Image 1 (tube, one colour):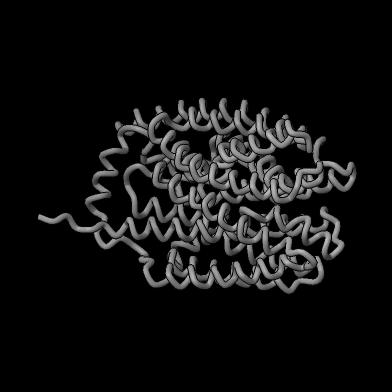
Image 2 (image 1 turned 120 degrees about the vertical axis):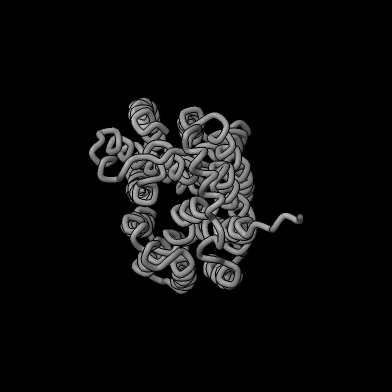
Length: 422
């Protein structure tokens, strides 16, 4: 008998396309726009960075209610609304002539990404896939890297058109057109729920007795645990430091004298490496568990922050820039694929949707703080280097605390499993 095609792979493909476009074209290459926009409109970088805060605060607030919104409207309607917000954001950016309009566009961007990226993909994969969630999640979120690599090559040449300081406006309009096309495809083929998922559910239930999948604890119990709040603090600082350095990396390289074309090449390599490392992160989690995967990502994060601080225009500095571009990609899964994994592994399926939404909100709140801090430091000192070193120290401390937190959560997890006989 011929095996029936499983439509979940179409859903996985659509999720891949959504992340490829939304994160790749709307978020991954945002640092390329920084110097072009601030120089064209004579805006201080610290003032422009408030737009990032608007975006991230919006995303944090929206994700607090993610579970409620999904239950009420479903994934497909939220995805459609998300694309409309992203398209609006790109169009607003393309005509903005005052920093206030960039703030408005950033609010729309924050809403759009809330309903088309990490939280939404986590919800979809959990609904449609019962096995190898880490690997599938890694593969889908790896689309960010491929999208970013393609977007970087496309928009860099448009932004830095010779004799046109407003080339970034053309880049934003092109991205808006791409979003419209992708939205149309996703709306045609996306399904809300699997038609038949009882068999998969039974498989999943059997597997919850072993490995990383477990039934978990109720959210009302989870929020009484001290390690829950410590985990939130660690997630916040992780988002603050990683987003802070990611947002300024291209500008920092340009500031120290590295040619914009080389910076573009570094960012393209970075995006390609991000694709591989996100997939690898998912595989590592499925094979070795949360602690091993988390440790690799965190140690790499500390190392690349320190490396970025000492980049220069010398030949050695160019090598350091490329090394940063490659291995910073191994740190970034801490703010994407690892969030659903944290929520699932530490607290289980029972409270997954609520805790995932809160983790993403807190992580995004860290984004909102990190960007203005590091750009404010630039306005004061004229360089990002001192704050890059400070962020490196913060990340190192966060690494130690989160390791201890995971030890406590694993102890609680074993108690629940033994008590429930899972």
